[in-house]
Image (cartoon, rainbow, N blue to C red; front, top):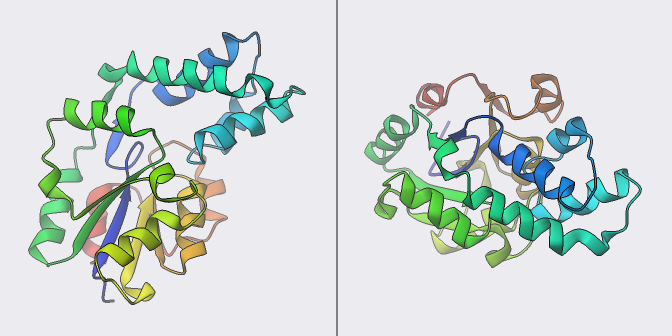
Length: 217
């Protein structure tokens, strides 16, 4: 199999979270507006555009979208206050080095706002030259499962063949993003969502550890 470019998801794939940090940030944000959300519904919608996720949970809780921006602002603050709960996936640097050695173009994509992404990225002491492409979903178009970030990376890096592009993430939204773009997909079983739900999206590859990506490529 020939792969010339790989787009990695950020949180849950290259970066791991302790204490369910993202879900807790959402739950606390809803609670601050007097709303209790179903934690299973929250988990099922992980990986999607953050405001879309909030709207979905509001409807599921029989609330209108009028509180969306207040909840989003609270979520944003909660993540900023939880930076110590994010850490590099131990296999990330090994995999990136492997891809670089093979001449494969490397992208990193996130559904977080730019400032949150930068805060977590800088805390990890990463060098942006590790990546040929860094994408923030809302800066290039629609969030996952829309394929806009993949198309943006393909355009900027002159990747013309979809079957030579691989998207890897840890949620159903990541896999559907790849399928909507017509590229190959790999899912990492990092615990963000149940394995059964992830397999139902029929990714091309299922990884227990990020390091397993090297055997595929």
